Length: 339
Image 1 (cartoon, one colour):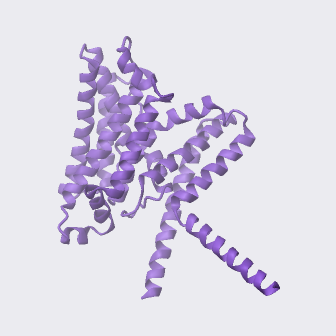
Image 2: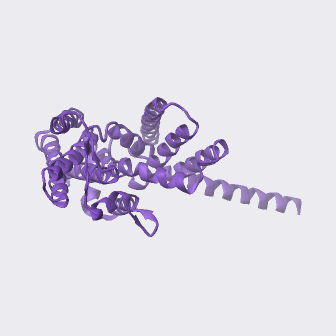
Image 3: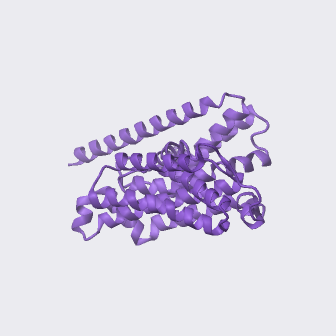
């Protein structure tokens, strides 16, 4: 009987170990565990963390970075990145605000602002996809142009939008079924984006392009068109984030979106996207955004100076890139050993 019990216990332990290994093999599972641990620690350190008001405030605060992170994940999967998203976000809000103060209908102004952001994306896509320029240099240059244009339009000062229509103000301040509207928009974008990344043919081509562009070309994929579409998407989402931010604060600030590109890259890489391309999920990026914002929120609740938030974001970015590099190096070693 003792031998049978020992064998049964050993079988159960091995089964549990296999189940645990299967769960933790998914990057998203590790992130969810990390979020729970961070949330538990912050709950112990601050009685305000797990309150309804604080969680809603945190959710509202992460929407802009979350929306941008969706597009950034796609860009990273394609083998590139977009450093202009923060500036495009700021420019879109400024264009919409400036046009509204000039007497143009707010919805028309937002449409023009969205088109201005998309134009920035098309320029990025043209030079990267068609001409073949480096994504880092190209998007960095467009970032300077967009941010400079925002400063020129506002003369460097935020524009207060008085008397905006109530229907427009509801976008940034209203609720749907108790959920803030801008959080609802973020959830919809994230769900659609994750589904499209997993199921749709156009976004599957992004994976093929990022994994092996030469093989993708040989298989008949127009990688240039794919890249144009990728940067058009990142700019469009950045513009949406800028318009939502403007509606939330009823202020068009040329400084809006500063640092958003670094935060979204950090979130995407923490969520499983690779700087080498070909890997990443929207769900993982969303979890990355939540984790980073939990930590930043915790620092605020613990009265840690705001400057430490940027330091923490930088540390997380370096840690995520290092982990990504080491995991890819280990994969290459395993492949060589198998051969």
